[in-house]
Image (cartoon, rainbow, N blue to C red):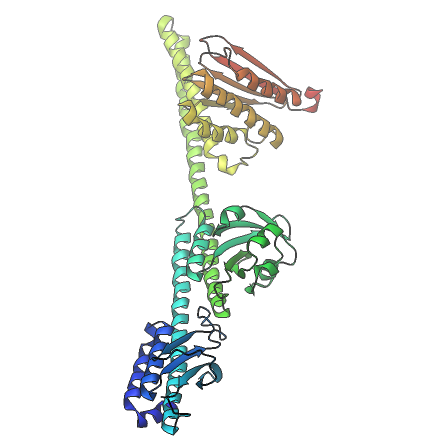
Length: 513
């Protein structure tokens, strides 16, 4: 126990016991409550009409950043200003540096304290320093525990793939723990001086998410380059675009690296409004450890997702091989056998056998389509006409009320340039949307045929036909797309007999000429 408390005990044992009780309970109570109790103990023991504790610099050691720098807690019957020249001032020393002072008003008619009273005042000031130390340590431990437990829990959620966008989880948790105004995650954009806001939590997050910010000499660039957190007291000092800087002029900002075992994944930007103190160095260290934990979890989740995708691709490839090597071959054999029997039959039997062979042939085509759908992840979906058509049908099936049959021939997955695939996608979307809106059809078929010289799209439905609808204005757009590739479009339609549309373009220069 400090010597000043020992000295006080000889003069006033009850004061010592009271101070020890306040110090023992300090970690479990707000700082202002403990200091007010100390002021009351001083007023009672010394017979003062006024006793107060003023903290002049409680946050300079980076652990009491949440405490107001001029906190004054008072006790006694008198009302005094902390700057009253008549007050007796006893310094509060913490780690060899002054952190505040104990302010006392002597009893009426008393100009100064005697030696015993001075010792008591010193004991109260000493206890105040110990209380500040214990409260600061307890607060730092609680905050460190929050960052640690928050990072571990969040890492588990990320690895378990419990959220579509884990970055949203990260900024939500950061705002909660850091008690910040907002939090955003920035990643490098298309150029070295651009950053994309991939997630945000705060009043401006809706305006910022998805936006690419081009800045010069940004602290984000320095954090990404060094992997060390940085702090700026005012966001106005950061080289942000004018509209953003204007919205957050007085906010302080901490930039935390999102760095795992590999390359820099981005930065977390935490802002606090000017009514709250900036993040201390201790807090930024805790936030950096938190960011490292979740960055490793992001890497692990990505690696796990890639492994899961590889397993899925291998399983789908195995199923596709089994369908091709076994099911289709057996259907071929059955079809050939039935065709052979049909050649020696006649009449109704022959017709039924031929019809069954046609059904088997159609089934084989559908199985082949299924095989290509299973192997689509192995092929570039941007250049695959089949993959784009399947995705389009997935989107439009609810509007149609049924799924059209898709038939394809030729190199539909790799034999067409990407710009032509984009046009085909637009043509199919327009045509199938027209069927959904106007045709009242119950069946439809899409045929894609790609050869070395030509691409043909055919769309058939069993609806009511074109009639006098605005479908013809949409057909003009399809015809214009075909003509832009030196191709053509044909449409046949009759009331009650459905509609047939052919969209065709050449695929080689000689054909286009």
